[in-house]
Length: 391
Image (cartoon, rainbow, N blue to C red; front, side, top):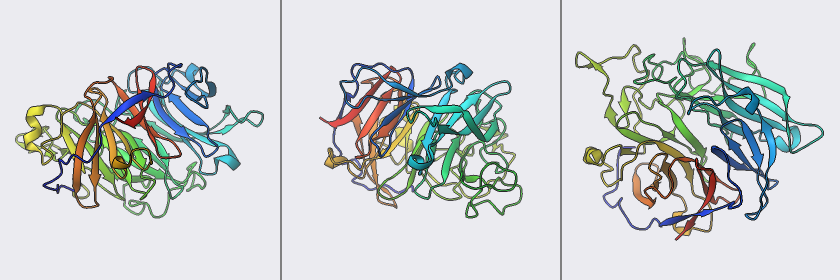
């Protein structure tokens, strides 16, 4: 994944603009948006609510679908209600899933809920069934993205547990769920667990390893997505001091943290030798693309024409029809700079990458989203949802 075409800085990717999708509404820390086959659009707010959005851009009100705000999951910036997912058979079983932070002690929870029997537009929080209860040592690097894959299994991200330099060395430790992407089966059970561990997960038979792990060596994945065209799993992994990265997630993959940051050796050393308590279980996989925190670092990367940023927000491969020049490209952005980029990857190398928006049309790019037609949106922490459109 390190190769790059000599014509990669091509001009065929389009310039985009942001169009306010719901100009009459201001949201509170929006983090995720999703549309169901029945047409309803749902928006997750970090403080603990999921809202049903108006049917069109002229709407002025929302409907509360899910609400755990009184539990106060949001205390510090990287905590809160962080992820949601609908069961593939949601229309039949009404099952809804949420990833949220809990306190005293600090932990991350993934739970199953059911829609109220009397109101299809409201989740009954008394139906909660806790699936994962993950202790975390610090308040940050919680991850929190949850998705059902094309295989019907639930994929869950969790960061390395927080603080700088992964002090507990979780990234290369297969005995912890921290620093990983997990894959579980919500429709079965393994032993006394409230979920099933699929038999084809990569570390099921490995002594001392957690069978839930699908991929590891990740610092703090902030948004992942499945390409609706190919089924590929894409993730944006937030760096520490120098590099942000886009990864194509594969079964059993080791993505290098904290031995590496992007394509580069981690800065943490002792006596000139990288200090780690865990021998890497497998050779790290390089990112599909990376970008630096400082423009002066660009020359150290094969992607030396990529502009800089500070914190990646992973997006989606565009499969819509309104922007033909963008089809098949992975769209991603920078949380702090407000820049939006796209890259094309042919399965072996990046063939093109370009800046589409910015920097700084807005600050704090919280997330991207796509609707049923494959058109894409950008969620801004200032409280707005924007459509991505060609200029």
